[in-house]
Length: 342
Image (cartoon, rainbow, N blue to C red; front, side, top):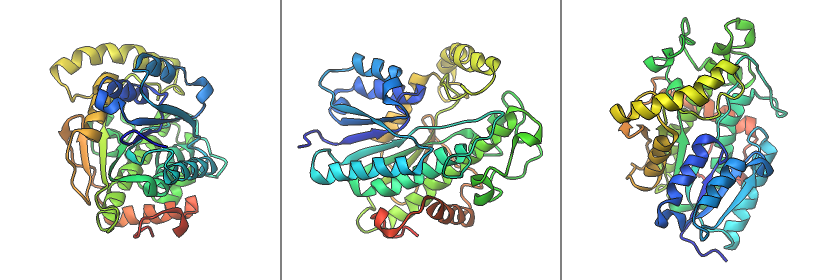
């Protein structure tokens, strides 16, 4: 039977930010007392996560779960099993659902076996399905954190760091179908990694739209209204998100950026470039230390409150995306306890 005070479920746990988040809360005894469910694409290869867990307290209850976010079947299988275990009392209710995993292509465009552009599928569709299905296992005062990005806002000046990928573009939401099927910002545009960055930005816009839409719908639900939704812009970090980019890009992000961030964070804690430990601390703080409003999103840039983009606040666009996602993921009433799910 479950005995800890709750479960922390974190996706992308073997990545740079994911493993840093775990390292952060393992330093706090009250958080290490939670049961950790850490999802990764391949548990056998999750060496970075293993190193973090080995350095933490031996009393921390945890398990590593295989989850392929580019497969709707994998998402469903994982959610069904977690729901079964929570209902049986084998796993405590989920206190924090941290949707951290992310994918970014650069000069390639890949389609998942389900038929969707992989960046959109992993960064948006999988999160919508997973969140809807796991609501029945959430603590009644639980929290859902979705990791955002400045790239979701076409007007954010930080997008010009390293180039102008949005130059000449008026929107990051040409339509849900166009994004889902990989018909927008393709390698045929002929501007190299900009095409992949734009699709990443569009997928993060969809994720931020999901924050708003989910928060609104939870806020009117008589059983789920105390579950809050928060979002975090973690800044640019030395993670492995750009591992599919050029050798020069990987060097700049993995080697050069951490050095710059180490110095920059001392003068501008919420600046463009941040160490992994800083953004991890911001994520943990947002999950456990801050009050969040019911029925609307609290979105932070580091520790500063930030208004989401104009497109993210467009109710018509949000509704069209939500409805498309339901169809794309094959969501039915039996999949979720959310009353206003359609």
